[in-house]
Length: 70
Image (cartoon, rainbow, N blue to C red; front, side):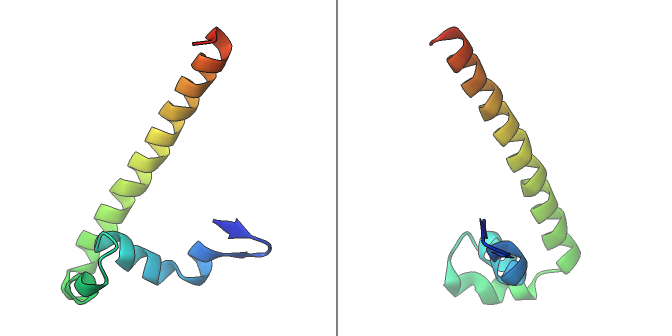
C-alpha cells in the first residue's frame, strides 16, 4: 500500500511479516519470533509468489469478462 511518498510495507515491513505469519493474531506474535527465520522467510516468499500468481490470474479473468461481456 502506498500513500504519498511513504509506503506502509517499507515503514512497517517487519511487523507486516510477523502479522502475516501469525494470521493477524497478535497473541501469536511471540510464537513467530521463536520460529527459525529461514522457515519464516521461505513461507513469506511462497505466499508472495502465490499472491502475484493469483493476482495475474484474476486480472486475466477480469479482462476476459470485460472483453467477452460475461
